[in-house]
Figure 1 (cartoon, rainbow, N blue to C red):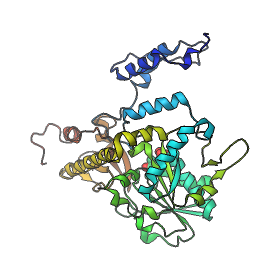
Figure 2: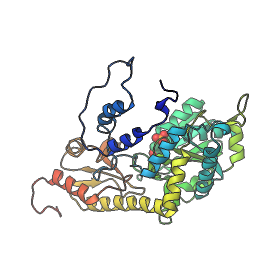
Figure 3: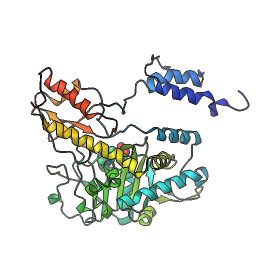
Figure 4: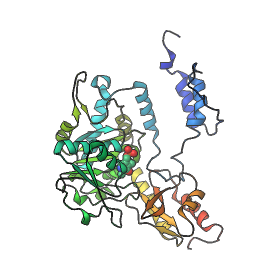
Length: 409
Ligand SMILES: *Cc1c(COP(=O)(O)O)cnc(C)c1O
């Protein structure tokens, strides 16, 4: 091996990797069955892996893809992620991440005011952000019960289980929101409100924030609407929460693993979720130990697009959902669950089963959800590159087949 191990300095390798990213068709070769004893070298590895990694990936940027909360990512985040991988900074130690720590502080400082919070940190997803928030609730104010709606994300129940807290589920109303009439005494509980439920995108009444001993708002999906002058009103009341979770790898268009956990009283929360000790020069806040600089791609996106550019993309996807719902609502052979509030449109065909239609549609166009024992198609407007007219015409073809002049049926 040469004096300087070339595996740590890329030369032509990165360029080759980027070229492969643009290649459209690949011939797939089998991967080794066992961990190889001798390696084939970096360039050959890229050629071997590209057909699998790139060729067999779900394409989230296709114009007919609207199924999930996973967006395509802007290329500025690819560069930032590449820098991150090459530098391998560790947010656990200031000595191993001098700028990365500042970048996270900056991003948190910029974004928390939109949610009425005054600080927080990043973690790898809202599952962890929710766990961190309920942990803070338990140890900062001593709550023993978590109250959430039936439509809350499974990570709430999971967190309650991990933390040894009682989990109480409240039914939802016809709009998929927590049925506040069924909320009994919550003055000693942690109330979890969801801003953008995973199945229907419903927002629980945020007027309830502040009525429990601790209120956590799980805004994993719809939180980014707080930056939009057009849509922020939907989340009015969020500022009364004690903690808020937002997944940046959803509607902030970030690569995984990127989320924010934010607190209104940062000092109180941090004192409950910090561990000092030994070799750490500053205490470890939150659940994760070593973690990467997810703030840097987010920082790059915010600087490159500005708030306006980010909001433009979010608002565009909101318009897409509205357009999709409007077109679907005019079809007699389709039942729309409700008009979308946060970009999630739920509907089902009336002339065949949901499963049947789903099978005939391109993969990734829609997902499914079960509501009141009924199967529905679910569309999530996370893809700013989607083409609603194209999607509608594909649905039309499948529902109406060859019936001519079908647009008003
Ligand atoms: C996606 C989602 C989560 C979980 O977030 P991850 O980032 O996938 O861990 C939690 N709550 C809601 C409402 C979500 O939509």
